[in-house]
Amino acid sequence: MKKLVIGIGGVSNGGKTTICRQLLTSIPNACLIHQDAYFKDPDRVQIDPKHGWMIWDDLTALHNDVLMSDVERWLENPAAFTQSQATGDSTGVHVLLIEGFLIYNYRPLEKVFDARYRFVLPFEEAKRRRLSRVYAPPDPPGYFDGHVWPMYLKFKKELEDLNVQTIELDGTAPVEENFERVKTDILDMIKHVQDKQT
Image 1: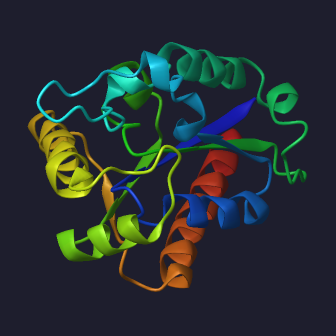
Image 2 (image 1 turned 30 degrees about the vertical axis):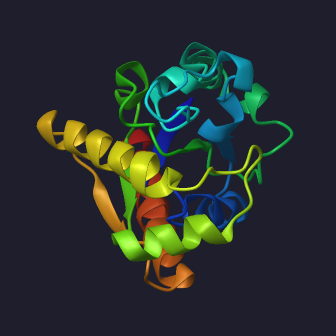
């Protein structure tokens, strides 16, 4: 069975979820996994000893083993895994979209991608978007400046140090522009996979 795994990663509030929802309805035989669905319960999330903040923006706040298990189940049998989500057609190429802010920093997961996209935003725009959203539990005062952005920079540097190759998407660009770019790339990849099989 022919498969592609596409990562949509990057900065919090960059546009990952929005573009993935569009791709899910536009790419044949597509399935979407959100990293956010694998957060641990609040009572299992580490606490910053200095500020008393919950450390959500870290791999330790996620059930990465469960996420990886679901990805492996999809790799074993995409048709069965995606039966309820797929926009199926006759291409025969199944596409898994994995969306999340730390998907490239979890090494076992990073290795499965056929393409890696990464949203970026400048500090002020990222902060504006973060503060305009309501979280449960809500962000405490100073959380973005003191935790969210420093953690983003930390994990961004880690990717650079590991030379993880990503395709950068400008989160300030029109949503449709980023969507069309990624959709076109994925459809080209599907055609390439099909051509290799003929």
